[in-house]
Length: 322
Image 1 (spheres, rainbow, N blue to C red):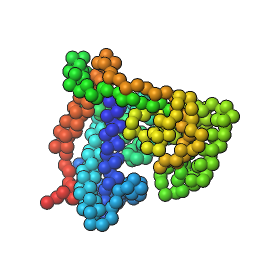
Image 2 (spheres, one colour):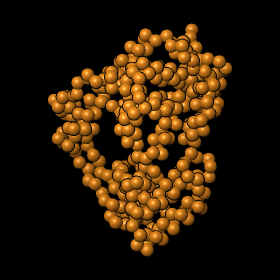
Image 3 (cartoon, one colour):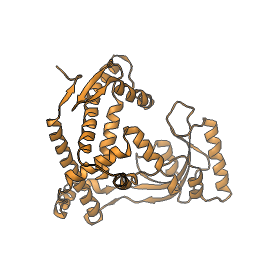
Image 4 (cartoon, one colour):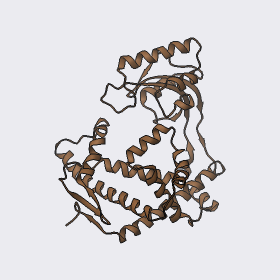
């Protein structure tokens, strides 16, 4: 169920990013007496708009204006839903500090690091207490949702076998040094020359016999793979071209003798093994598939519940009035 709440909160956060800032002063919405101001809307935009522009989204010109106007309404809808779910969660029963930590524990463990978890909290603009209350509400609403049967899981598998095909994969280790002179949002700032020099120093240590995985844990700036010694498994199209091409040119046990430049920075890549394509059997996926379908059923039940809550709520949306 925690996967559902993480998805929900991320969706709300992403939508909130897209709000426009030029909607004037004052209140833009009221949800059961709680106000959403244009300043709140603007603040979210100011924090993340620059990141979106770095990703190639253009807000300029007439088309940009039209795009922003439509997103303004959609974003406010999502902010209203966000406030509504928090209101309902607070009504589901008071939690002690101990209960809050208990409920948040397994949710927090989904993140690869404490830094990623803290970044998520900042992104969704919620406290651990807020998330704990939402998790508590979801548990209450969905506790009587029956698990998906093996027969239903089998039916889904038989009708969607292509979903359970695994293409060929490459399993590599890599060490990354970011290139960011201040214009990007990477967690570490290096010039191109600095990052390349750091990568070349690592290659020199590898030539002296240093362990690749150990160096990755010590030096790599990729928080998603660092703890696993830089281990990364990917299929065709899942890695940027420069990274993929360099990896495919290696034999198992080999590493790149020169730093590999991508949009992220400089990598040193070591080939571990190639994993052949395969079709997973129902027995292979039964447990995970049953879990996923059960989670989807619970998510659907929770969404239906929140639609009912929304139908009873007193909501004033000034961007959609009239």
